[in-house]
Image (cartoon, rainbow over all chains, first blue to last red; front, top):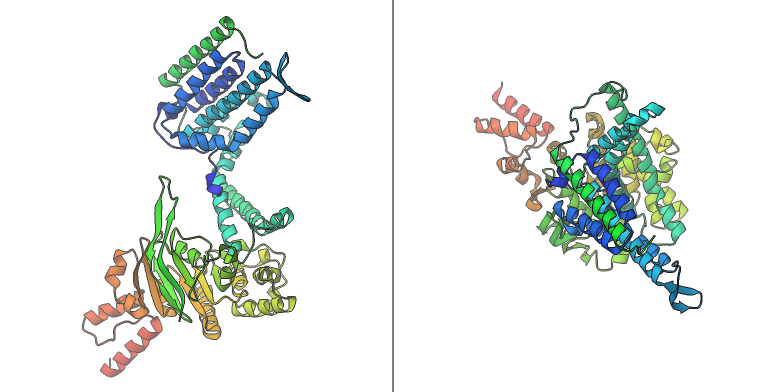
Length: 271
Length: 286
């Protein structure tokens, strides 16, 4: 049950996307998200969609995994789509009481749904193909300029790494404690809301206790290895911005040109 | 009368995914009422999966588990009743303690059974006694106890449900030698007094040799052997191939036997060995 969470899961592999520099991946993801939102008509939206699907195929990760990550936010996509349906201006083409549906409303609904779906798919590509450590490494590097404002970027990144690293451990632990309490007759699958929340106490207390225990142990272990924050710390694996990253950047630049050209030369469907 | 009986019991992890892994494969096991059964096997041989299927914590992929002749999954909504009858103490059970006092924590199981206050109090007392917890510890917070005491408190929490079958998954792991001996002695005492069925999963051949009537040897999800303790430990070479071994003292004694000394086979404990050697010395006037 708890193991079915795919959002944010890393799936090791050896595709061109896997080999990209994580910093490049983060920046390009942000760029693609911007492209998704500057698309003004169906032609440019299709262009970005084709690009996202091409990238998905090139990761060599089964489409099933992407569908699974979509499933979790399907409700949000449908809900925002539905809301947008009723907020179009212009001549209504369908009217029933206070409900007015206009052509702009339909276009809005389709656009918003596809945009959110593409957004999730594109972000999934990043998390599926980048290990959590690479990801936090990249974030640390990208945020480095903030040290000017006395923000401890290294410490923040380290905390993120540790938090991510402990997610599977704590999930496993939760599973174990739940089994142990069920073996003592705890009933977690029936009763009303209040009863169910109460049934979680025997799971949450041991979980918190063990989380604190693990945190103390980890802090001791880090101190034993002379960890003292980010000052003067060097890296075993340094990130390199290489040829493949340059290629990816050029492809994205071409995509941007395509989107802008479509927006200029074809009539806009949404503003 | 067989208290537990399994028929073609199988369990597959991650069914239908690329990570599919058979944990148990067509197990047919019969355990008689009142028996003390030891379960040994290499890490990943399927011991933990098996014991969790026996008390209905995981549902078998195929096959059945019968408790007193009845399929435990016949009515899934009543599976909690099975868990009260087959008490399972997990590995490192001290991490499941959560109540304010030890007494309340031990009472969690009986409380879930819906017993009366007086009955619960009774059960907590006797469970604490069986687990060797002193009375003054009952009002303390479980988080203030020592490691060994926490372990006892957690075991008492399961014993308090008064299960017909008590399953312990590595109860002595991580305890010091003295604590381990005392805990094992207490489990034996409990078995002797209550006369119920006990299943002990352990990596320590010495512990198993000292306590079990019969041993189930698990290997790659299958039951490789299920026989009397002596019979199982006389097959040392086969056990070693499965990444297991016989108790050290058994090995020494069989070496001596092979060297031509007149000693009986199947010696499992140091005490037995000492007696036999003493007898040998006396006879030969060494």
